[in-house]
Image (cartoon, rainbow, N blue to C red; front, side):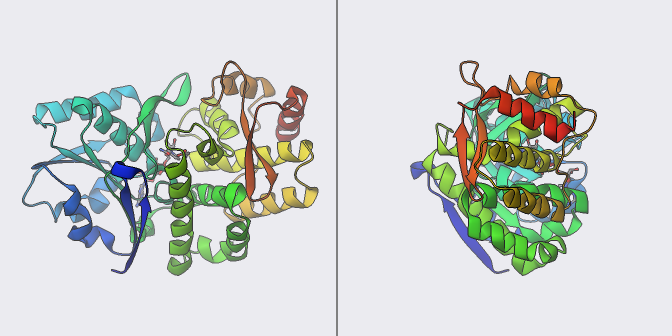
Length: 362
Ligand code: NAD
Ligand code: GLY
């Protein structure tokens, strides 16, 4: 049960991220972060039967409430969040209750948001079980739900007490979901760390075969980058926006196709390639860079183009309500070079239209 521990350094709200094998069976990582007598485990119909008992095994001294959500991005909404809050009220959970999110990013985001609201905020623990949630969504405190008019539009910054990443939980994850998580891993290389990108490129085959040593290294470096960025800019006033590389295009794909149709990571894969294409249009990336991006995204089993059913108009309409739109101006995360992202607002709108046209083949 060897583990590595990183820290998200947010002063009084600093918290550890534990990464390793077999960590679900280690009570010493969990119990110090539970303060009251009530523990609410929020999971879903897929993950609860797989892992809930392993967490509960440490909680015989506590009053445990189970909340099992329906599975799917389409359930990351206000109604389901209300159900979590209702269950907590029905069980008379008080302000000392601790809420554990056990699952992927959907469970983590909605549970974190419910924790931030319940009696103005209760203790919250992340136990992420997908690759995407282990490298991205469980770290950094972005919580929330989708709205029919936009993804992740309702939410709060609310940091967990601890993040426990048991890489063995990925054993039960299917290949499509695993690929989707790899999109966020590649994202860190593209936006921040060229040597890491090259390491991923060299090792992608073995990573996709789930070599545990390499996987742990990839998760560790991803969390390290995320922790560094979040510690610098918790509320996304600056550098944190770079973590959204590929996401403005990606969110438009998810929204247009209907939440859950394209996985978030798949949409981010195509979105990163679109961001690379726009960066080339601006003269920052070369044709070789574009080919490199295409290769690594495809090697992770991800799409490099948006769905053929989408139109330029779809992108323009949906991107107009992206969270990075400020005073009506769309800001995009692009790449000055591979491994160096920038947030750009003063690009020629024609260049964006050319990129959309190229990516959609329209
Ligand atoms: P998800 O939570 O829907 O999980 C994917 C699927 O895998 C689900 O069917 C789930 O039940 C199943 N699953 C989870 N763990 C499993 C396991 N160990 N074995 C078998 N099946 C398992 O999707 P996701 O990709 O984890 O997260 C996507 C969500 O995360 C999106 O809503 C996205 O907006 C959000 N997100 C948030 C942040 C953030 O900073 N908060 C960052 C990135 C993404
Ligand atoms: N996933 C982007 C962020 O956490 O800021």
